[in-house]
Length: 157
Image (cartoon, rainbow, N blue to C red; front, top):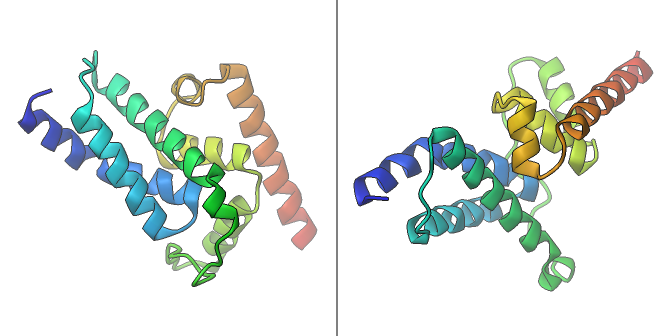
């Protein structure tokens, strides 16, 4: 890629990469590191991307892989957090905040597909490609995640 194409791609996808990394890591500083490492990998790669969808999927895959490797690192289990509350989005409606907390309480596999489907507007086919799972697995996880959220809200009533 040419330098101007790299700068344009970094500008277009920086926020998306950060949001996915924040979703996976849970801490803004780690999400910033993951974003920087992903964009650095984009600058150093010599791949040719067929189209914008291919580039977007590649960036998401690199971000998720980087976050997974950071979470598996041995130092991750031996550290003490300095602060317990990560930067969470601010909601005007308490119901939206409650839904956000319920989504964060779901297992990682469910949270990821919900986030990519609803917040990044990705089709199930593209989510399957990014996560290296079948499209049926994506729809199953979405269904199970919705059902878990439904149960959570029914228990609260």
